[in-house]
Length: 371
Image 1 (cartoon, rainbow, N blue to C red):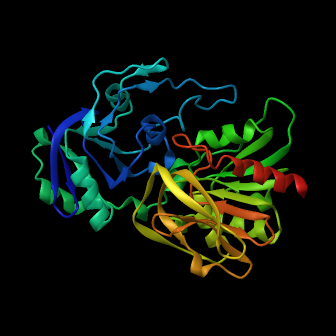
Image 2 (tube, rainbow, N blue to C red):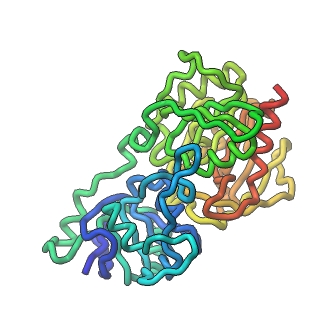
Image 3 (cartoon, rainbow, N blue to C red):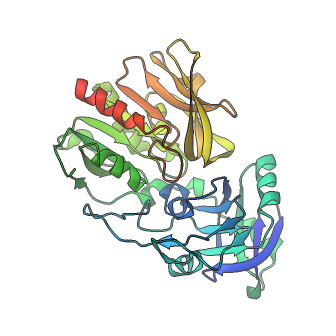
């Protein structure tokens, strides 16, 4: 037996699977029907207990950690599970897929990540939507823990610099197989591997940089700057923000994704805020906004994973909203009037999710090539 305990004392009793251990973090939910291996290896989930709203998880197993020719995971979004806990309605005991090498249970157990199954995830999700995301714990009942008391001392992961924990520690360069069309200096704030794949298959060389790399003090050669997704409060990433501000001042083409959207907004003097329960899933509709401030009529379905957003009212002169969430009207992207600097809150590289926004990589490369 295991128990999920929320910070307000609410408890959900279920069965333990994965690692037989306690864990704590911020309890969030994702609405994707598939893609649990990619979600769990997304560094943006660092410090979070991830609830899957789809009722059956694990039925197609987990692929191998096989690496590609560039040296990163071929099928997954990083080389580790970053969610600190997993909550599902029903964890499948059996799996079937041509690329699967492990069950979800064995994979979580191997990575020492606990899970809980057999609880009412619909009721949990409704509570999080009503009250907002909460801190919580997964505790093993045989440890004799008093649930309500144990919920009082949960550390808030958003008070930590989670980006520093998931970013790379040294500069690594990935070369495309064919002709190199451009070179991008990429700030790794917890980057997903499919962003690398998206650049490399377009012939872009990628310099993967630690989040606090002093780009303006290096002799690195590059044509543009990219800043990735990642976990936690963007205001913790002061050194990345400073580097982005200097890149914009130098008029270097810059593109950001997810956390990168928030960091670019902060770099130009804008502000960010925490959402009530965030956007996590593979079915978020976004409307494109034109230079006149009106929708262009284009709507794309996107993959998302974030708990903070840009306050577009704080954007300085020359900047405008680029995309907006069709469900709640929150900001989903910003752009400078020059077209040289832009970012999106969603994931155009998908994985998991739709590929509607994949064209944004081509747009970035077009801007870089025109310089």
